[in-house]
Length: 187
Image 1: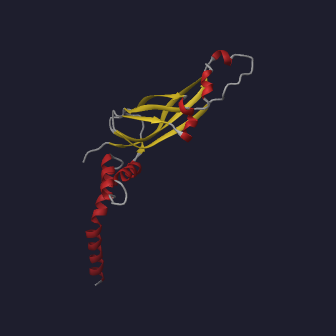
Image 2: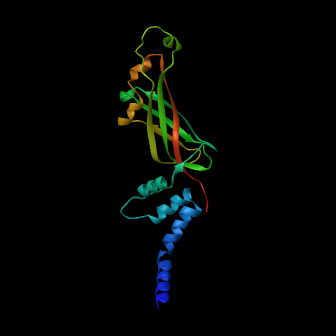
């Protein structure tokens, strides 16, 4: 009698739970951290209460992983602007061939560059080196596509007081770090 009951429970669990097990198997084993896993997640989590755009962003974030520059990277241009109190703007292009980028960080370094001022015996009022980071998340940047960014509000601390750039001894550099994304895969 107990064997029949246990068998019936197992059969019920398989019949009613198969869809969940199939979804997890495809998402975690067959297509981990790929665009297919994002698609499966969106299909499984569709609802009338939350927009598809929000579900897509959440699924992309859940499936994203750090990307190393083994077969491409992000490239672009950026610069500070003195308009409206100063901001940092630019664009990046996805040069990865097999990844969709879902997020990245931009680091900006401000530093002194004039060698003549460095050799001076006078004490100079030159700003100390400074690094600021700006995060870009919840994007879907396919290969060879471009994303534009601009820092606003609290992020405007990427640019210290713009008057420091009037001094030829101060300059900046920027670079992209912490790139995340999903691998492109087909079923």
